Length: 455
Image 1 (tube, rainbow, N blue to C red):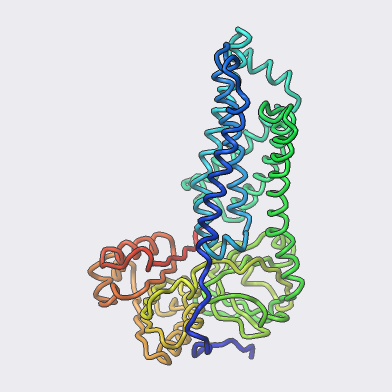
Image 2: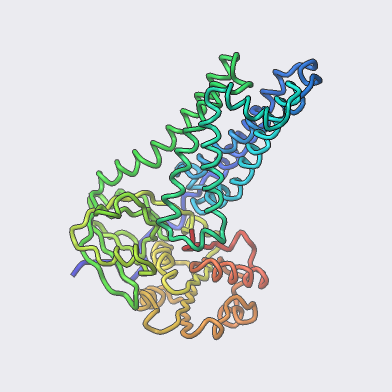
């Protein structure tokens, strides 16, 4: 029998290491300063004579939008680079949300750059807009590569729209998104060699090149080298696959030095299963129990072809990991009373989070599922809650029967919710609905923590 810890929280000091919030503030300030400097560079180089000449103002505006748009592209890359100092403070899910919200700005700025620069060139040469565009393509060495880069980025942005993204499998969306790095690589020569703000200015050109190289280095280190080193160190492999319920399976993996793995309950890893067709893609799955060296466990739902294939993997399959990621942990807690509310397989990170909480925390666990067979890890949760003298609520039935997004019903289930810290996990619609209901009942936004399984 493969051991997994099922009952009782581990002994742990009440004092917890808090993330350094100043890191996020410093990064935001540095980012804003860098954006301002990027936009100021072409303005500082422009003379009154050049700006007032035919096409001068449009050309200057094109240079400013080019620098701002490119700088924001670099910021987008860094937001998704898995930088530990940022991830510990903001959480990878929040960083990715910022990445998505920012995505339209650089594309709009670069579109404006193309139009304004062409317009300025046409006005200066007293020719038509399309004639100016043709002349630019013929005279600038790397502009064709920049056009290819722009088209690729627009296509990637198109498949990233929520309505389109929902129609794609996670695997397809992920592969398409990888082409962002190729698109960025195509754009670099045009910026460094053709960029008006950089050509003839060795210091600015060197600093801009260094910024690109530093960004690429961060991506290589944190997205590639660190996961490889961690996987080689821990040498994980599957030792058992357990059926937990209809379409729900637990993978138990074994590895070395798991006692040195800095992971908290509620966090997730990117899992790569080193078999044909799967090794290239990391799947985000939360731990469903705290590691019990040399074992740790993840519980997943076979919701598609890829996850179904994962549940059929055989013992001995090698596993590589990225992470751990996420701030959905006990470090986020500020109160001694909590409510853990999960739907379906969403209860799995809550189970690990509960295990990682100090024994003195007053706990209410609410588990919602369609059928009793869908109550994942219900026995383990019940034992853990009983050991803490907490309260366990099982809501079995259709969604409309248990409207946790209704403030009145939520208050009926957890009458003192206004005094509790709330941790939510499940589909995005479930988490957002319960969060709104909790807010309506007096729970402040700082005391609501949500984890979603959607990409």
